[in-house]
Image 1 (tube, rainbow, N blue to C red):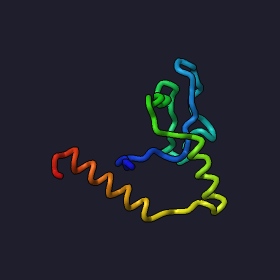
Image 2 (cartoon, helix red, strand yellow):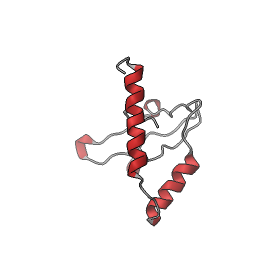
Image 3 (cartoon, helix red, strand yellow):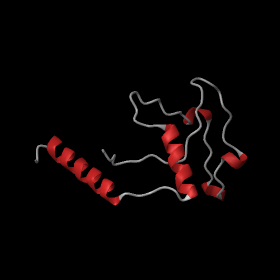
Amino acid sequence: MKIDPFAPSATPLPRTNKGAASSPASGADAVQGGRNAVKLSPGQVHSLPEAPNSDFDAARVASIREDIRAGRYEIHPDRIARGLLASVRDLLHENGKL
């Protein structure tokens, strides 16, 4: 199990069609905060490219979220520890330190 140094937000981003025009953020879409309000023009908003050969499984993520909400999700510390150790070994081996 590899652990990436950066995990994206669990909040899904809306997908947009490439080249499709969208309106600028306003009202509820803009962050409220007086002089610190954030507004994005259509040219500033980009969708993320689809990752080829991605290990992401949306159905599995949805299933895990539902299990967490229902209190059925079990955490296995031994699996987590083995995965962390394997990841560290891989990193050390890749860097020639093992």
